[in-house]
Amino acid sequence: MVDSLIGIIPAAGSGIRARPYTYEVHKGMFLIDGKPNIERHVELMRDEAGISEIVIVLGYMADSIREFFGDGSDFGVRITYVENQHLDKGWAWSVLLAKPYMAGRHGLVMLADEFYLNTNLGEIINFDDQRFTTVLPVKPVDNPELIKKNFSVDRDGERVIRLVENPVSLPNDLLGMASFVIHPDVMVLLETAFQSGRTSLDFVTFVDDLIRDGHEVAAFDLEGDYLNLNDVASMEAAQDMAIRARLED
Image (cartoon, rainbow, N blue to C red):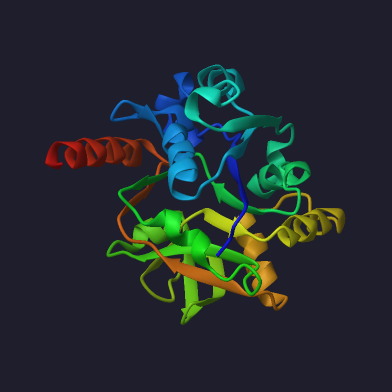
């Protein structure tokens, strides 16, 4: 079990596919049943993973996020903000910007536009922190288009053997979700990848590179509801899903 973690929320992207909503509001601040999605992440990290320190990586509409969360004290956590000035480098660069705050701890990385509802995601921290370099959630889905908008996962038991971002063909019905528990060594490896000449890097592709280099990556079986808020339809679906869940309670 991972005893000490820091939360990392990459929230620098502009959400082009979610326009017109994202013309006026950051997609991570989109109200889902009255609550910004990033606030849902903060609550999950605090209440289910025992995280008290969170780094939010900003870019597009940064001030709206800063003004809402402040230093995090109103939400029972300490929040530090980092500016991503190089969005062209991919969201792996946003993750790397949190490296100075790791202090030898594991990190729980949750993209600002990943929506989770009534899930067991908090249990993802209960993996062997010495054996696995990275742990990520997976979930079988009926709609292959959901996988093609995210990434596919090929696994052998609990061990992940391949990840493919925006796949054309699918090895199975497993959807991969962009929330990762990362060992502190991951930041060193990520920094090395950029220093080797990589000018742009998606974090999913980076984790697949780790697998190919012999690092152990684990699959965590997610239970509950999930959506990637990557377009107007998914944002409206998340709104409907959250309202229905509240009314059924």
